[in-house]
Image (cartoon, rainbow, N blue to C red; front, side, top):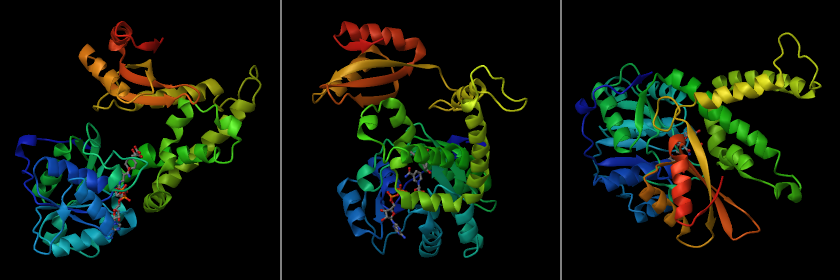
Length: 372
Ligand SMILES: NC(=O)c1ccc[n+]([C@@H]2O[C@H](COP(=O)([O-])OP(=O)(O)OC[C@H]3O[C@@H](n4cnc5c(N)ncnc54)[C@H](O)[C@@H]3O)[C@@H](O)[C@H]2O)c1
Ligand SMILES: O=C(O)C(=O)C[C@]1(C(=O)O)C=C[C@@H](O)C=C1
């Protein structure tokens, strides 16, 4: 894995950019490019998605005479290889895709395209998304501060790699160069396994008694959000990366056995010589969350949550964010929990640990009710 080298030497993205697949990711990229003043042309098998993306200001429908500088393929995984080959054969542009798995599509493309045409293809993968699909879920801010893998094959043209890295930077993301198979092992661990863990936990809720579900707080929402994603899309992602995912699932199966033994052991009973005890397993979880890099890359910065009651009226959230901005504290993350029985929402502002006390005091002096 390498970070980007000399940014100054990267080619300029002047356009036109053709986006194939005007869904969540394609339209988000199109919005960024359109806002930079770059001409964007949109292609999708679903005409209504092109119309919607066009209506959002993300570009216009493609015309036969268009000559793109860059084609971005943002279709579901099972359609990616065909769409890349089609783009390489139809245009002389640099072609990238944003698919969640990199090795299998590259193999399929390389079986059908060779030489100078294959050299124009550079795979990539933004590590940002949503549990929602389609152009209406798109946002130009989606990629801000996120990692974005760039996975060139050995014969990729350096200027093609550079142009894809320019796109990543224009989207506000951080390019991370990685070999395709290594990328697939990485995302099995940091994206596909977390997704499946969320699905398994959420699956236990579907038929739960309503009075149990009424107690749902932020914990269960944090753990299950991505389980609301499109099952068809995730079936394709998991099928394309089944080997790496299966390796990890086998490890998790062994972890589950350990966990069941540890939970069933009487609190005073010593665990076996090699079996980890409950505290050891829970502590390993702490180590795992601490290992996740901070939003800006590098080691995680210590944060603290500040809880604020926000009246359920239009404009109140904006006022809270405005106040935090005036106080000079950057909000790293935000969660909102609605209390079903009360006309307030509990808003959790995640901020740099060193700024939390200052924020609490300043918000209280401005009349906000905080929870310490
Ligand atoms: N959803 C995420 O969080 C996320 C994040 C990063 C990467 N990705 C990857 O990005 C790609 C797109 O995902 P998405 O979430 O934007 O999906 P989406 O369903 O929102 O959008 C996909 C779009 O592709 C169109 N489409 C389907 N087949 C096509 C074809 N053959 N030609 C042209 N258009 C076609 C669909 O009509 C749809 O508009 C996937 O490969 C996915 O793995 C997704
Ligand atoms: O934030 C989310 O909703 C996501 O699931 C995004 C996420 C991820 O796992 O981080 C999901 C799949 C994509 O391939 C890339 C990003």
